[in-house]
Length: 201
Image (cartoon, rainbow, N blue to C red; front, side, top):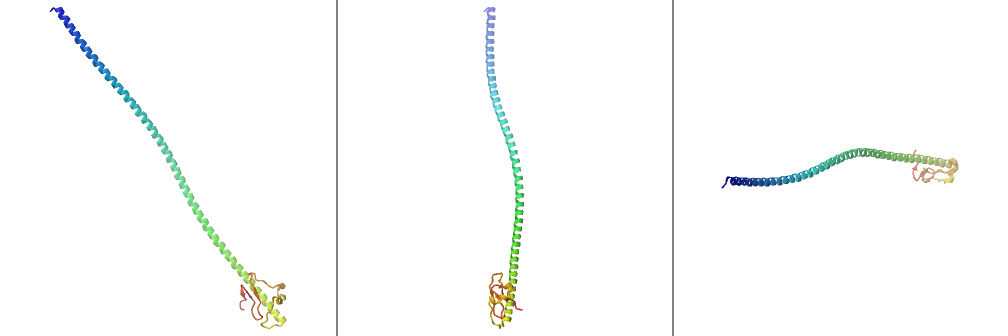
């Protein structure tokens, strides 16, 4: 074999080896590019998920802030209501105490009124009884005068008309309590159906 052919063969062989290495390098480059593209895609997807998570986290944070603000507002309102309730309870207790005092005063006043009415009734009864006894004394005095002037003895019974001339104003007295007078005989006491007879002298 000629040296020229040998060199040419070596050059061709070197060229083939170079092409083989170049092909292999291109294949590796292509594989690397594919892996890089896949990695970039995964990175983009991961970034999108991260943004979604971040957005959800921001939304959750805003919701938490809103809930915290609402909770604070409700807490203030509850505190205000509790203060109002305490104030109303105090006012209710004061009103209850005032009502009790008024009721006690009303009971005392009612008792005083009843006592006054009783005293008034007793006074009226006493006054009517005193007036009635005075009327009986007038009747007794008229009976005695009638007996002296007419000479009637004990046991004689005068009528109202018999006694009119000896009574003040010529009028037969009337019991203020509505009782009925019994003149009675000379020697016995006149009496009232309500207040009875004159007390013994």
